[in-house]
Image (tube, rainbow, N blue to C red; front, side):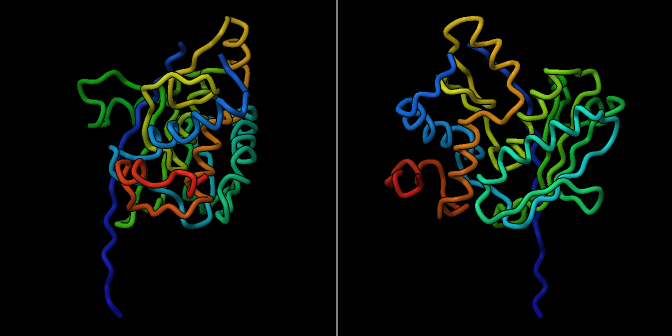
Length: 231
């Protein structure tokens, strides 16, 4: 039998939250979701990545009951968006690890953050040569508490499912990886209190997993295609 060498690539992803109206209007959503997918799913505008095997989420470190409830909520939010890929919370044998850190060792000793501001959280994936996700590690800063902690967790969870990039655009639809246009402070408060994966991120995940788009497709190629084929 041939020996196949697997090539593993590692990329850090820094959490950025930029708050600039949340709308559930379907016309706005349909207009924004493909643009959001293009902005967030293509790593370095070059290629896509996703899980092609069951996702087993495992928690490590100093996590609370509330943290575990948040993890279970995130899993339920995306379960139907992942197509044929099952996802579950496990006690061992995981491949998507969430590290609720006790100290700053994974932050201060990381070469990726040398001469940079230490992030609130980050995700490191392991991919094979076909850009399939084999493992992902999410690290949550130990100083984070409550709402902010879980916002970072949801943000990094979206990265770990294959939304590898951030968007520089402002959207009317709620999301975690780009900017949001809020009509007033009440709309912003509603967003901050929402403990679920936002609809725009769910739509991007659904497009990534339920379409027939190849992982080798570049952002430029996707833009040339008939996008309706992937909706």
